[in-house]
Image (cartoon, rainbow, N blue to C red):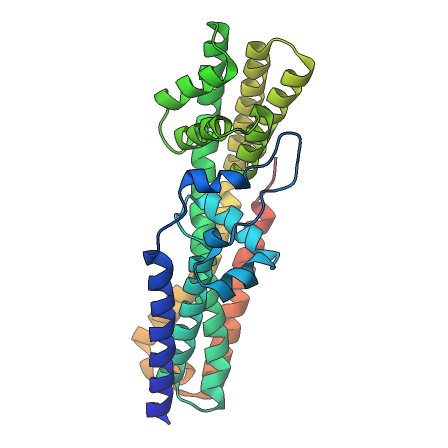
Length: 319
């Protein structure tokens, strides 16, 4: 039985590895071939799905093109600034899930109990790339928001000096560091390949996913429609964002104690269990040697993680 499962797992691992290598090895479509995906002026619908951008495997491309999850995954990958196709991302998640499942069976046994624990571990393996993507996305979003006030100030000064909007954007892109400079260059590239300025701004807001940036983009789009002093508008938006940052800092200060309490309460049972393992290993070994102990340990970990997430959710105040 062990030989059979090892053979099946090895075959699946090699198959998924071959598919991943094929995905990574084939040439990507250049920017000028993707220009057809840009939205036309005046339209608010999202760019159409290009099958070659999804995957070089025809069956996988067809599946992803007709699935609503594809657009969300592609947006998340863009916001995390990962150079991956949706097909590569999906193959990575499935590979980790399959690997976690079979490794769990090999180490925990092939009985009912082994399968019972292998399934949630496979789910964890499937979700790990999504969690990593979420971390990268949040980190990049925070970096962009930290540069947003500086970018608006540079853009306002450029316009006050007599530059046009796109000239000011190009000047700001040359003076700022990533990731904001990357997004500004992407904006300039979109306008160079034929997209209207308003649509390029809206597309930038969709890519980044920042409320503060959406506020600035909305002000820019309205100004281009109704007119007004653009430099003064940008200064007002920058001041509003500064005030939001000040309030966010005060809230973080007020909730720091509760967040620290949640971290301590979450770490305390784990530290206590490790101490007990060192002091009375014969007593605590029942938790990992008996099926009932493993079930109780799994329930305890689930409740602990749930409590930690609930505390984090309570103290996360949106502004």
